[in-house]
Every structure is written in C-alpha cells, then in structure tokens.
Image (cartoon, rainbow, N blue to C red; front, top):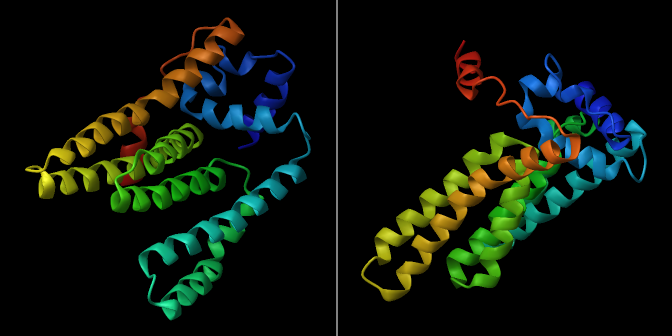
Amino acid sequence: AAYIFDFAIKAKQGDFEGLSVGGYFFRNPHQLGFALYEIIFSVVSESIVFFFFLNLIWVILIQYVQWRISRLLFEDKPIVRKICLVLSFLFLPLLFFILFVYGQIPGLLCVISAFYFFVRFMRSEKGKDFVPVVIFGMVAVMLKQNYQISILAMVILMFLKWLRKWHEKKSIKYLAAIVVMMLAFALPGILVKTGFGITSGKEINEGVPNILYVDMGLQ
C-alpha cells in the first residue's frame, strides 16, 4: 500500500519511475487501477489521514447499500432487515480496514452497489437498472482485481436465469447482459494500462502471472 501511495504522489508530478524495470508496477501492473484512484483524490489532499477519512465515508456507504439490499430482498420482513443492519455494523474487520489504504474498501463499495442494482435488474429486467451494474462492476475490478469473482457470480446467475427463460423472447436480454458483463470483466485493466502507457511514455509490463497468486494462496 505504501508503494502505491508513494507512486501516486510522484505520478501526479510527472514521475513514473515506478513503471520502470525493477519498479513495483513493473511487476504488479494490476495495481495501477488503485494508483489512479489515489492520484485523483490526492488532488484534494495528499495526507494519508484524508484517505483514512475517505475509507470511513465508504464504509458508511457500504452499510447503507447493504441496508438497501436487505430492503429489496426482505420487503415484508422488517425484523430481518434490522438484523441485517445490526450484523453489518458488527462486522468489525470492515472497520479495521479504514486505516488500511488499499483497494478493498472503495472496491467493496462499488461491488456491493453493483449487486444492489443487479438484484433490481433481475426483477425489473430494465436497462436502467443494468447500466449501473456495469459501471460499478468495472470500477470495482479496476480498484481491486479480486472483485472479478463478483462479476463472474453475476454472470453465472444471469446464465441460470436465461436457462429458466430460454424459450421466451425476452431471454435474449440475459445473453446480451452476459456478453456486456464479460467485457466489463476485462476492459478496466486494459484501459488503465493503456492510459498509463500513453501518459508516461513507458511500456506497461504484463507483470507476474496471476497463477502465482493462486499458487501462493494454496500454500
């Protein structure tokens, strides 16, 4: 996290040394999305305390969105909604992460917002509910690639919905949505790397293979 924050401050001043051979982002270009987030907000303040404050705001919004999701899922069960709200605030690790400036908190806000509109889309089947799913999903993946699993979960649910309604004409909506979501799965990384490459004038390395992280997690 410290490497990313330091790079963001320097990159705002035109110093992209972190992209050079041997630099942190030479090995980990997948972190450039969160670096972009820090570059944007560092325009307001370069203080780490400011980013702690942002995390606090995001955590409050996460709790709010979770409450909105519980309202959608348990419309006629107010007690269940209240229990969901209390349990969400009792999940202390989320509060601990306020002091950890990384992609988890803002990324979680985006992915949980995507799920909120996803639930609405699965019920309404309207494009106005699907567009926010794509936008929030793309930003979530840009901030933290781990959230690709959330995009995949939505794709699987839409595929199952299509299987149930394949004989109906409107089922084509779900196939189209799946294609769009798969594009949203891959597009953020490409756009961020291309943008940094053009801005810095440096070639963005592919970085270490993702399979190494999988192997590390299995150790």
